[in-house]
Image (cartoon, rainbow, N blue to C red; front, side, top):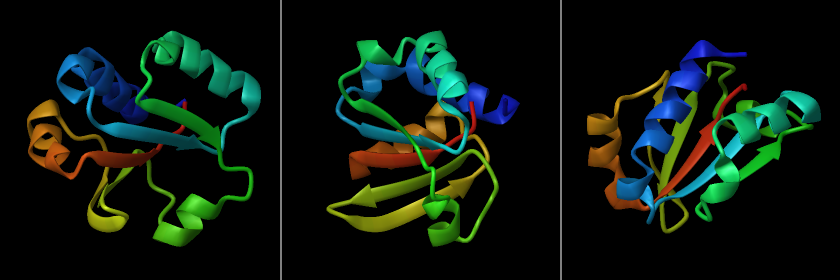
Amino acid sequence: TCPHCRVQMRTIVENMDRLKDVQFTILTIADYASTLLFYERYKLSHFSNVKIGIDTGYIFPSFFKTDKVPFLAIYKDGILKNAFIGSIGFAQLKNEIQYKAIAQSIRP
């Protein structure tokens, strides 16, 4: 339901050819039906580097101490390197992909 999350997801999907080496983990607190619609809308099954899950325990927002979305946490070798609240454009994302792993919390 979040328009900023939809913009962020479009940015990622439209540039996936340049992001294919980045692992995306997309988390939501939305219900299964809404999550499935989001998954299908962006054809996420076409991307082996994208995983999606439902945070039923509300762990992600609690861990990062935020309820703002989209929230991107950038990791390298299991260490948090950067975090962003709100959608970011491809140019900024491109500067961050050197980290090779992005966990993203979004609401479909």
